[in-house]
Amino acid sequence: MESLQRHSAVIVVLLVGLLGLPAASANEFMEKPDFIKTCRFTDSDFVACSTEAVQGLFDKLVTGIEGLEHVGTIDPMKISKIRILQGDGPVSVNASLSKVVVTGFANTKVVRNVVSNKDYSWETHIRLPKMRLEGNYHMQGRILVIPLNGHGKCWFEPSGMDIIMKTTNVLDVRNGHVFYNVTNTKVDYTISGLRLHMGNLFEGVKVLEDSTNQYLNDNWRPVSEALKPIIAKTIEDILLAIMQNIFNQIPAEFFVADLPK
Image (spheres, one colour):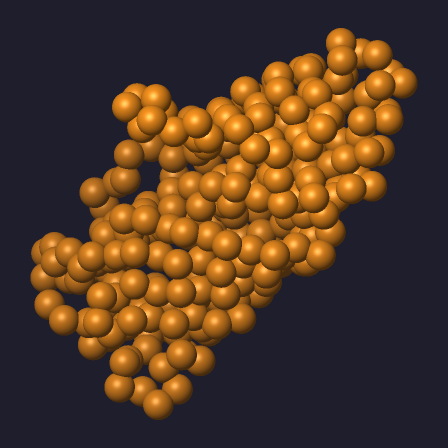
């Protein structure tokens, strides 16, 4: 609360019931699943091997991983609620999204994955042709110069996404195995397009609703920059929740064999 009082511009995004995930399970994988490719820091092609390993993990998450049923699949992903509060700047909103469905991650292309042999963090470059987020919204505030007030159905569809995800980990040894304790993710991205629609703006005044949506789509570049902190934080929290659940149960040494114990 003190930080909210000290800063005039604040972004708070809380994902409640993200993907329906409970607290991380204590069940651990004692044997390496077939879909995991194991690499070594000492390999001359370690980066290529690690990139292939992460791509294999994403591909498997499209259908779901046996033993990690509580993680679900990455396409579609269901989020119970997203609450958004942002103060000064081009976006000033008090909003919530509920019954959110995120699609598009089935087409994830892992371009490059680099794991540090010093602090064991990793940097992952991901290409996503299109992501769609849709659900119910309730919003008061403004985006750019447009005042927004309404509640109803909405969707956001960024395309041509190039994502750089930086992940912070510490190593945790349990039952003779090394695990990644994923503590933080930071996401930056660029997009080549953005489409969006918010229904029932201005208490259902159709002319205002249509003209506002048209304006936001016609000016998608400044709109996307204004919304970038919100979208980035949403992606960060989605990926952090997934990775914490996965790597709490699958030993990190299955991915990188020469991690220290």
